[in-house]
Length: 421
Image 1 (cartoon, one colour):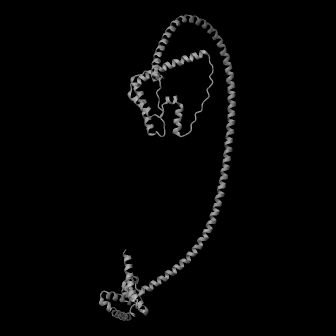
Image 2: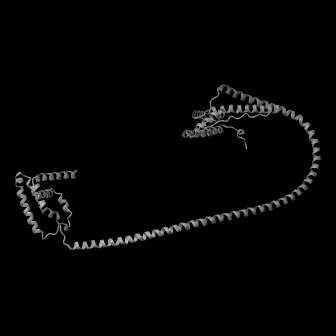
Image 3: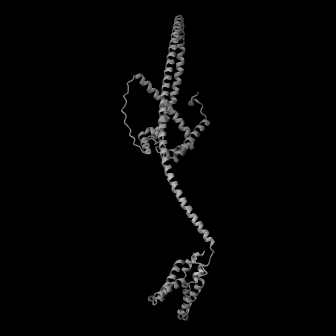
């Protein structure tokens, strides 16, 4: 695997990386603009610089109290001067290399206008944007100095490698002599190593025998543990079965109690239903008797002849005829003077007619259209004749007869107007 930093950087790879960065940040910006009430857009470097402001923004957004506890300063351990010097030199070297990379990366990204516009848009919409440092000019100078120092440092390392190669040739001769001495020592060590290997093989055989015995003991112990676990499982199953049986017995007893209650309820309902049935039978007998009576009445009525003209019969009676003569005579002044004689004549004629028809015609309530009688009773002729007969039968009311007749006429007009409205 090749590290990404060690890959060959081309224009196509740079454009691809910038395009991926812009697509990711555009989707992030779109999500933030559509969900501003539920999220924050924060620059990571600014969040590291100002941690308190970052935490306050989060606490405001989630509406929860947030307290930052002040940590006590940790005790630093004293180290040797050599380790301090090496760590400081490594840190300075890392800072120089980082400055070179950041300087070159800024030069490459500044040429891409779309990426810079997107970065400015993110800065404008961010709730915690990256604030530029007060010494921006100094920081740009520092980046250039770091880049120059990195180049010088690389040159020094190359010169040092060349000098080390020259000194290495002189050291090779010394090392060849040392190698000859070490070869002799190795031969002696090989012989001693062979002896120790034989002893180790004997020890390995003994250890393998002990291992086999230990494995057999462990297997027997594992079987015993399995048997114990199986026995425990059986005991738990028996306990569960006992509890299930108890629950079933309780449910059966509850069901039997409920069934007994239902039987009692059904018995009570049966008794009430029997009583209701007896009452219904009595009512049915009564209804049947009434139906028989109505049937007999219908048969009796069907045997009679059918009569129509109840309204005409009422109109031929004395009250209606008197009222009609009064209405007819009131239409002229001469008729008003002749009204008493006309009334006497109508009474005689109606009395004679009623005597002739008394034996031939049945009572009015036997007519099939007897309901029309109420309609005729509401006519003005009938009401005037009825009020006239009431006044004539009492001699004391003769003087008030014209007023009574006028009052009935006015009352008739009022009722007629009310019905029309």
